[in-house]
Length: 143
Length: 411
Ligand SMILES: Cc1ncc(COP(=O)(O)O)c(C=O)c1O
Image (cartoon, rainbow over the protein chains, first blue to last red):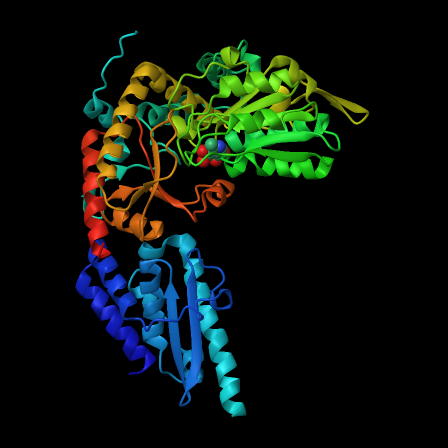
């Protein structure tokens, strides 16, 4: 699936929840549980996304020209939120990640789950993903 | 023993229009009172009335509206005087709130008296508002900050306080009630000891004002700060109480209109207290509505409020103690209606979000007391804090919701 198709699917899922806050939280936490786990070693300070109120670890690697994201958080809901980004952007080429227009947070009313203060944290995650994509695209072209 | 009138919560709730609403499909349960309380109709109406009928700039005006606004404003100074039992209305300065009151003392008193090597004593359970202003002045003056430690129960270790006091101590600044733990500190004793060492003391009464009767004369407090918005009044107003001789000794904190007697380019003479510290057009409307909040608290009475809140606290603790993994943070013997806790294995942010999804407003995080969280070895807590309008039914629904939410985490 393309990044846009992934976003579309996520938005459709949230539409089914019909604005019910509890169902949305439940769904977000379930998404978090689907996230591929990270090792204790990877759960290090250097993998922490700066600017988030909760702890978020985000790791990226290149496999067959595509980015493989792994993430974790110390809170179940934040883990679900980062898992949405991973879900949408995983297994895509770095250049596609860089040129992607991430519009699903707005469409699913992300602010209700993170609050305005935490929007900064979410923006930090996107920024970190872009850093990785830039780094990995140079790695790819140097290969 | 004095007879305390029982509180009719359902009648009181009718005075708070904001409580009558649903949040996320559930009736709102507002347990974030330590951050800010809600406002009764009388306070809201006072704002409307003031702007509809009486508004004008105060002091110096000759016309009728100026006179009404001025007398309304000065009337509240007298009410605040009575509220904290100050000796004279001139000892009450209107500020933006506790934070500004503390900054005022740090700048106008601290800067004047502190010399290199002098000491300021704070405690490990202070709100950032009662830490940072002192750090700023300490850095400028080369003064040293000493900290009274907190026990595992969330109480100040007073023996350590006595050890910290010396002839170098110039200022002690301490909260009356901890916003994070609810601990009611033995301020009377602490003030006495500070005075014995020759120090002046500021009491941060932000959390005390809504819960218990403050008496600055009985306490012999040198300075005392509080915020209107935590005691059912509007935001943007608070008071600083200071003993006359101290306020007179202090230099102005800000310059501008109102705080002067005469201004010439050859020199300016300052006004008397309290005006010396009220530069510029003050927050007249909110001061006047603060008067309505004082009325509200005094109409119900601190004794009645305390009895009611104690019942809520006990009921909540009884319910929460049944929950597996419940870890209270701060179990002082003498406590206001604030419960800080964690649930073992679940992040406070997750619980806060889930409680909100059920219409229950609590606060999560460090509550502006990071040094205290460091001391307790915690990132943060969930804090439920109760006010006069909270009901036993709300406690039930909070405890029930919490147990149901915990199940979602597979606990
Ligand atoms: C103990 C304590 N001190 C100071 C403050 C600061 O009050 P304000 O923000 O109204 O200035 C608060 C408010 O959270 C508090 O709880």
